[in-house]
Length: 560
Ligand SMILES: NC(=[NH2+])NCCC[C@H](N)C(=O)O
Image 1 (cartoon, rainbow, N blue to C red):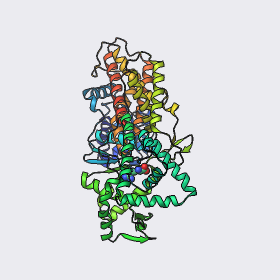
Image 2 (cartoon, rainbow, N blue to C red):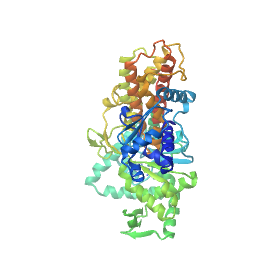
Image 3 (cartoon, protein in one colour):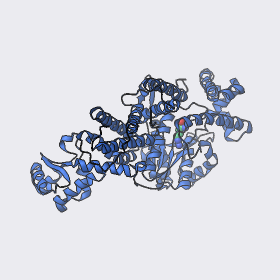
Image 4 (cartoon, protein in one colour):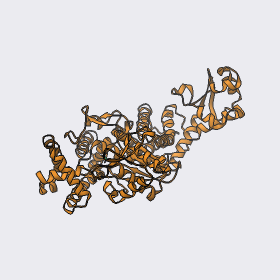
C-alpha cells in the first residue's frame, strides 16, 4: 500500500538531490517494535555525504520533514521514526479491501506463460509424501503467479518410462496376478517391485533380465508395451483420485514417455554441435567448465536417460509455450540434475535456459526415518488424507455437533490441514510428519486459520448491521490487525520473489493470531458509532484469510 510511499516522498523532499527515491526506499525499515514507529529511516548512509554524525543528521532532517500526513515524526538516535496516522490508515486499508475483495493482493508484476513441472509421480509406485510436497507447492506457486499477472501451466511430468518398468514387468510375469492388479493396482505393483528387489539381492541375473525387457519396451515390443500401458492407466486412475481429494487439476500429463520420439532430435543436435563425448561406453556432455559432473545422455546399450528426456521436455516447452520462466518443483536431491540440464541447454546455445528455475524442497521423514518405496517404508498419501479427514470430523463433532454440512467441512479441514502443514514449512526445511500435530485446531495449523475465518464469519452473521469501511475506526486495539491486513499485497509479492508459499502460510497465522487477540480484548458487537467500522474490519479479516487459504490451495469453510 501507499503508506511507505508517503514516508519515502517526505524523506526525498527533505533530503533533496543527495539520495533518489529508489535508494531511500531500500533504506526505509519496518521496526520490529511499534514504539519505534511504523517505518524508520536510518541516517548512517548519509554520514559520508554530509560529513556529520548520524544523530545530528537525523535531527536536522526531521526538522525539514513535512509531518502533516503522519501522526508524528520522531528522532531516536540515528533514526527518524515515522508514526502513521491511524485513522486514515484504517480508512485506506478497509476501503481498499471492501472495494474489490475478490482481488485484494492481486498485482501486475509480470505477464507470460510459466510452465510448472510439478507432482510428477512415478507410475506403478504410490504417490509419496515427496510428491505431495511437489504437488501442493506447485499448485500454490501457480495461484501466486495468477495473482501477480502470469499464466501458469501445470504440467505433470509423469515418471512413466525408465528401467524400473523392466523390473516391474519381469516381476509381474513371475509372481503377478491380473486379477490382483485390477483389484488394487498400486498395492500389488508395489508388492511385485519390492519382491523384485528382495530376490535380486540373491539372484543378480534378475537385473540383467529387467534390463533386457526394458530394452524391448524401448524397441516397441507389442506385448511388453501392452503391459506398460495397462500399468500406466491403472496407476493414473489412482493418482487422479488423490488430485481430486486435493482439488488440484493439471493442464498437461505429458510425462517421460511422451518424449520418446523427441529424443533423437536432442542427441542429433548435441552431436552436430560436437558436444557428445564417449566415456566408458556411454555418451556424455562434459560440464567441467561449469564445475559439474558430466551429463549422461545415452547408455552403452543405447537406452536413453532421464536427462535426455528432460532436455527434450525443456525444448518442447520452450517451443510450445514461449515461456518467460519455466519452473521445476522437484526435491532438493535432484539439484545437480537441474544444474546439468541448464548447463547442457546453454552449451547448445539456448539462452532461454537462464529462465529455467529448479524450485527444490526438503525431505519429509516419518518418525525420523527417510521414506523409501524400495525398502517398503512408505506413508500412503491416500491413507494420510483419509485419517486427517476422520480426525477433523471428530474434532468438529465436539466443537460444533449440529453443523449442517459436517462431512464437506471435515474434508476441507482434514485435507487442508495436511496441505497447510506442508506449506507453512520453508520449502527447503526437512520435517517430520505427525498426523495428530497436523490436524490440531490450536497452534500453528491450517485448522486454526480456518477456524479463525469461520469465527469472523459468525460474528458478521450475528448482527443486522452492515459493515461500512468509510466509518472512522479509532480503537488502538485494532492497529495490529489493520497493519497485518495492509501487508497482504507485499506478502504475495515476496512469496513470488522467493517462490516460497510458506511466506503466505506464516502470514495467515500472524493475521489469525492478531485477530484472535483483538477479539479476546474488544467487544465487537456493541452498538456504538464505530460498530460498522469494526464489522468492516472483521469482514476484511475474513476476506484476506480466505484468499490466503485459497492461494495456498486450502479450503476456507464459512462455518466449522
Ligand atoms: N522434469 C522432471 N525431471 N520432473 C521431476 C520428475 C520427478 C520424478 N518422477 C521423481 O519422482 O523423482
